[in-house]
Every structure is written in C-alpha cells, then in structure tokens.
Image 1: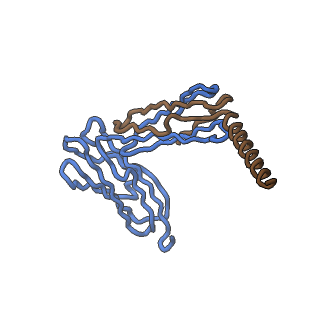
Image 2 (image 1 turned 180 degrees about the horizontal axis):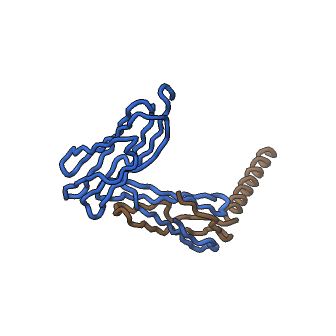
Image 3 (image 1 turned 90 degrees about the vertical axis):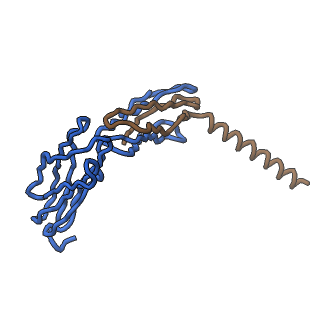
Amino acid sequence: MKRLLYGTSSLIIWIILSLTAGWAQQATGPRMVLEEKYFDAKQVKEGKIIEHIFTVRNMGDRPLEIKKVNPG
Amino acid sequence: MASFDRTILPGGEGKITLRVNTSGYQGEISKRARVYTNDPRNNVELLTIKAFVKVPIYVSPRYVYLRGQADRKITKTIRVRAQGNKPLKLEPGRFDLSTRLTYRIEEVEAGRVFKVHFTTIPGPAETYRGVLKLKTNYPEKPEITIPIRAKFQKGGQR
C-alpha cells in the first residue's frame, strides 16, 4: 500500500513539473511565426521585379528582433 | 533584395519584403532568403520565392562550358528556341574568342529552333572566357548573349 502511494505521488509530481516546465518554456522569449514561407509568382515576363511581403508574427512575450535577412 | 521590420513587439506583426529581379533568367527560378532572429527555438527561417520566367527566346543551356585536353577538338552545342509565332532570324554578332573557337548556326526548324555548335581550335593549355552575341529580329530581345567558359589541360593530363 505504501509503495503504491509513493508511486502515485511521484507520478503526480512528475506530471506537474513537466507541465510547469513546458508552460514556462512556451511563454518565455520571442516566438517567430510566419504566415507563409513560400510564394509562387507563377508566370512572369523576363525583366519583371517580383516583390512579395511575408508577414511575421511574434507569439512570444518578449520583442522579436530580426537580425538580418540574407538573400541567395 | 530584402527589407524588413527589425523589431516586432509581443503579439505584434511585422513584414519582410523580398524582391527578385528576373532580368537574365529564363524558365523556372527559385530564390531563397534566410531570416535570422532572436527566437531561441527557431532562430533561422528560410523564405522562398518561385516563378516561371517567360522569355521570347529560350537558350538551353544558357552557358557553354568547354573542358578537356588542349590538343583535341571539343564540340558543345546549345539550342535556341523562339517562343513567339513570329519566325526568328539569327545573325552573328560580336564574338571575342575567334582565335580559340569556331561556331556554326544550324537551323533545325525553320524560324523556330536553332542549334549553335562550338568547336575548339587545338592550342595551348589555358583557361579563358568570353561571349558570343547573336542578333535577332525580335524587338523585345534584339540580342542573345551566350557566355563561354573553357578550361584546357595539356594532352595526357586529367
């Protein structure tokens, strides 16, 4: 009986700790979410400049810094 | 080219603008940009822009690359295809490798498909590059530029 009680309480503590740790990890810091990562401009004439705006959301609780964007 | 919002506040939204200049391209293209952020779980993201660039005249391959033994003749062929309904005419233009290569234009399908055959003139082991320009009767593409690159080694070497 003692062993069963010990095992159950250990399991409950472990679950609580895991949930707390997961929540803490999810809520801390900036979090980049891109609406899309890929854009198909379909058919374009040579010489045309394709321009596309990608939207970025910050779902975290700290400011998201975009350090650089490297084309190529 | 890229422009972007440097800081996005929690719950906010920002923009990354990518621009792709299609000059000099033909057919399918895919351009990528890497986005570096301070997101600890996802500090690099890849953005892709894809397109199909339509040109009045297709050249395939776009470059000529000749490689081999300097004392042997090597031939490479490229294909030129008109995309419009108007019959295409090709005329020789500037060619800056006439001492090292010869070329011949073959009309495969009248006014539509051509082949340009390049043949090396055996000579010393060397590396060089140049261009062949062909004049066309298409006002939207009056000239085709074919870049040429060559690398030759002494006979018997690899």
